[in-house]
Length: 360
Image (cartoon, rainbow, N blue to C red; front, side, top):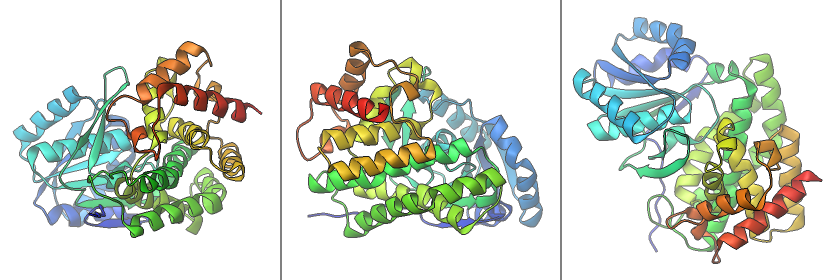
């Protein structure tokens, strides 16, 4: 049995750490392509200027268009070819970081990810999730390496709206349950191998931190301060969940998320919000212990994550549920990593029951 653990080359987390990015860029060269949405870049522009004063580097801004599509990756890769920067830096949320990873892969350049929100576990991973221009899930791109540096400035995350952090809760919540299911099925992780015991232990710790520290972490973000609880939550969302999902494996929750993106009504929802509902549906699908499902449902309600289709903006009609279910079981979807066969009818039933549970 072949086991593989994946992770970034270096993970750095702390208040004010973005001011040290020049040191990490300098380890690869003197110039950096900065992949960031204009609004995201404005949030960190002053800190980047401070960083360049400490350790000089030449920044080249590549404005991210907001959706990670193959056309957007092509466009920014062409900018990188013209600029010939030594390193690609992604700044922002999961889509901007995934785009930066794709550009770095195409150009065979080192990659630094700088999450400015803790909304997903994308910063540490060796893959990018690609969507259509309309926001419908298309495919996942796999790379041969993880980011060289993941640099997390906790004060920047504390200054972001709390909804981003709550979305991160939803993405991280899936990590333990999906890895557990994949492990039981001896299903492959992102590297195409079995999970290590270390990876499973990481997912368990991720889940424990979420249950214990989410409320205090939300309060810290509302107050724009960094506390030990927020520090732990940020690490759980970005590092523990990032290593956990890649090395532990994925299951039904993310496939149900992918199915939900087929409904235009969900396009205003964040990734972790859709994944959170997918966790509840997965627990129904695998007939989890009632106490476990109730604990997850109570958690979703306590932090304000969606527990019903209505909270995702979706009407529970047979047509909507069938469309999501059929998309969730397409060939190649990780729902087929569950330790039993799954059909579209199974997913339809699980979605309807999860929605009913969340409604009461």
